[in-house]
Image (cartoon, rainbow over all chains, first blue to last red; front, side):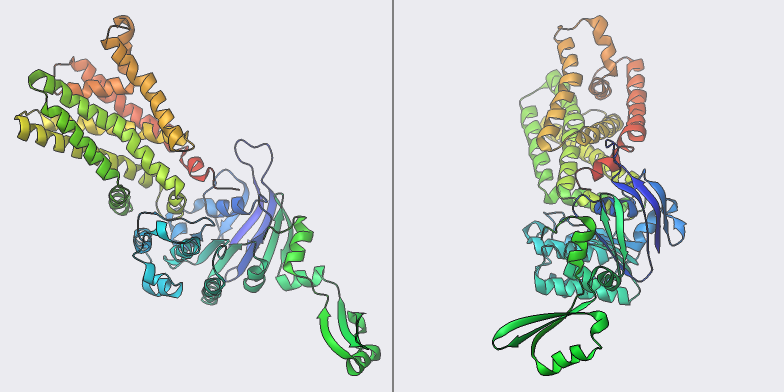
Length: 283
Length: 241
């Protein structure tokens, strides 16, 4: 759906490239996670993809056509949820959404969306009086109100309580099931692991790794099985290479010992993030 | 330009909700209050000053305040990822300011007529005030581009007043020689003042014509080569990378 080839970008007053020759593809109907530490170039890439930053080098195509050839119709197709709360503070939540809704040809009903994210009862409250989580949920609804085909979500659940984050994640998955495509950036690796079909890691403007989370976990994980068991009151650990789990020694251990835990050596996205980008997650 | 019909009512709705209309109305009442004490020729000199202050000073402050709020609340970023074009956005600001200035013309004209029985050719004030407001809305937007916050916007505003307004005042006080002062028509506030004063007092026709052409060309230049090209970089500034 979006193809990026040899993308390079540097800000007008900067000597160095923020994005340095990256290429990737976002396929139709998938959730694509774009991950990296702060300042790695995630937001810059998103701004380029949503046509807010001109002057880049390389090629970007949306549905087979150069992105630069699109005008207003591109924005009819996409929904964008920025990381920071965005709303006219003196207007109510509903007034904010109604204002933006009038700018689109195709729109959806607001009531079901607002009810789903738990803002319906507060729709007549001024947006400036909303909590941070409520403002982020309002951002999310604002991104969906034009019935987009493509969603750009920047840290969509950051600052949202777990119950509402669950609802938002379900809505993202339902959007995908209806054929929608999502470009997602997040520091919350649990969300990324749960939502994304494929992820790409960016650090210092370079694309360091790309692939489905499962494949990356296999690639970066250890092909081992760790067995913990208790014997004579003492905890014992035995590590088996994956190739040895069909051997009698492994089965004998399972049958004869009082097994407490059994873990494969599969790694987490968080560990891959640290390994690939060389930066620890902030939160 | 289809989105203007949404953007314009939105502008007025926000001017109302953010209390800016109230501030403008209080200013208008103050002008009327001052006009109450004036009579005859002095009043006829005071009325164009009101229109000049409103279409130059208030316009710069008004557009600066709305841009400041939109930047602070990041709503300008959100607008730029809708089908709204840069032209539509900038035009909505210009038209909203022109309508505000014309409301001032109507309000003040009605007030001085009802209170003092003073009449003048309002239909000649309208194009002058409209053009002056267009030029100064664009100047206000450009000043906002260089401002990091509202305080620095006010500093930019004061610098503009100092550089472009005060020379005319000094010339009228005889502090600047006439040989130099005749070039002050190139200062936007002076050209603006000439246009508005020409409705109330005799002004050489070439000066009126020059001021109209000059302010129109200045507006086109500012829109085409200054305000529009720098708009996106202004929107994207301070949003992180």
